[in-house]
Structure formats: structure tokens, C-alpha cells
Length: 421
Image (cartoon, rainbow, N blue to C red):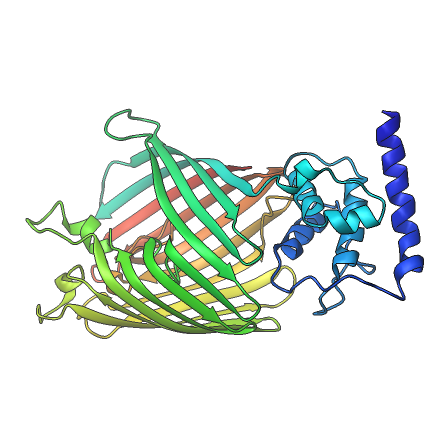
């Protein structure tokens, strides 16, 4: 106990004096702009563990030195952290051990090799109730209860490269049949982060997975630039697609599981504006139901995304996709207005939104939305809330009708509770 108290007081005194002793002559080099330590310190600042550099910032876009970073780490070490915050502090202490030792804060050799692999994840429960209506006849409600465990490890290779993965295990709360509950490796990729570009190699989330294809992509992606980025990718896209899931039980037809896929995009941010344009080229038979010419196998889907944050509370976002090769369901678009938003780190935060979605499956591979389904257009309202730190509840309601057939309607109630760790 005495040892811990003395160590904490020594750290505080050394750090307090350091700004006057070493401010004029700083022998330590800059921390590169793409170094993982910036993200770690930002997370600790958000959790209230670190107060940042001086005025709680990194002095604009200026890189800070290893000495300055060590000062912040020393202050964090003097606090009684636990859980994920302690793991971050320990990792930072290992990285800046030499600088901390020069400040008089001792770091053991064992800590230098600690925490090279970081695990994040979530456990979530989802309830969905679907009511279909055709020609005025209301079908019986289709209810589902599902639980999912998701693990996301990140292994540090060096100061630029990391290996990341996602493992999912899902179970149907109403059934114990089939491969229910089996753990599946959904994604695994290597990612290199450099000052002006980023490289991904492996199996990872497809580009525009929030609008175009909420599924896995196997291949390579290169992003060049900072505020404005050029993004290029090529490989194979998982096509457990709209056509596959909808028609495979209605026709004697086999659909492919993978499709050759390339994409090109330009995206950027300017103040409160966030925008991008994109082109997707996909070779698949899954879209041929919406064709009059069945010989077409390669499709070009063009799109744009736009978001604007009016103030800290209110924002609007939307997208538009168009497939000029198909004859039906060729457009998909969405407009959504958001108010605030639940933050998993901050207890008591909440948000609400209203959206209109038009999801033509000829312009999508797999939708990311929960209550307005592909083939349908309609309104969605929703709220989310954080009752406890790292626990978020979400409730959505959608009222929609078929894009081509107005007499087919659908109402969906969706609820989810997520536990992050």
C-alpha cells in the first residue's frame, strides 16, 4: 500500500515538474500521425482517464513527441483504472517505457510484451415481429428470438500493421436444431495504416456495407488520402443476396455464393458535410430475375452518399444507388434524420430517428436495414438508449409496402439489447 502511494505521488510530482524542466529542450522524436497511441489516448480521454495535452487536444494537427505522450501516460498510470482502460494504459506504458523511465516512472520488462492482442466484442439479444398483409388479408405474425456472441480480436504486428478478425456464434432462442450456436470465422484480414494511405488484405466488410452490401468481401482494398480519399478494391463478394434468399425456395434454381467484384469510390469530409460517390461492378447471375435480356451477367451499380450535421444534436444522411442493367427494382435510396444518439461509453445518452427507405433489390446485394426490407418502401422510426455503461437498447418500427405491388404490405417491430465488452 505504501509502495503504491509513493509511486503515485512520485509520478504526479515528476509530471508536474517536467513541463518546466524539459519544455525548452525536448530530446524525444515525434509520434507518427498514424501511430495507434493516438487512438488509445483518445479513448482514455473519452473515458475521463487522460485529460489530453494542455488544453485537452493534440494541438490541432501537430504531432506530439514521445516525451509529451509519456507525460500523459504517466498521469494515467497514477490513476486507479480497471478493465479495458487499464489494458490501454498498460499497453501505452509498455510502448513508452523508455521515456517513462527517464521521467522516473518505472515500467517492468514484462509489461513491454503485454497486451499485443486486444479483444473486443458484444453479446446481443434481438427480437423481431413481422406482420405481412396481401390484398387486405393479414397473415399470422412471424416472431423470432435470436442471441449472438461476437468476438473481435486485434493483433499488433508492428507500428503500421495489424491483423483483425471477427468470430460469430448465433443461436435461435426458439430452436436447438442444425448448426445453431456454432462459432464461425466471419472475417480475417491484415490492415496497414500509413500517413496517407491504408491497405486491407483478406476477408473483411465490403465497401459501402451500410448501404449496398452488408456482407463479407474477400480481396484487397487501398485507400489513398486523408480528408478526401480515393478507394479501390477488387476480389470476390459473398452473394447470399436478395435474389438468393427470396427465390431459392420458390424456383428450381441454383444461385452462386461468390461473385467477381470491383469498386471505385471518392469520399471526403469538409466541416459538417460528409459525401462520396461510388461505382460497383459485379458479375453474378443473381440479378437476372429482373432482366428481360437474360444474357447479361455483369452489372454496374452507381451511387452517392451524403451526410450533413447541422449541430451537435441534429443530422441528416442518405444514399442513392442505381443499376442501369436491370428492368425492375433498379433503384435503392434512403433519407434519415437523426437526433442525438446513444453512446455506449456514456450512461444516460439516447437518440431518435425517422427515415424513409426505398430498397430495390436490383441495386443492393444485401441490405443493412432491420425493419424496411428489400423489395419494400416505407417509413421507419426508432430510438436507442444507454441505461448503463456499455449496454445499449434499440427499438425500431417499420411500415412499408412492396415497391411494385402496393397491395403487399409489411409491418415490422424490432428490438435489440447489446452488451459491449
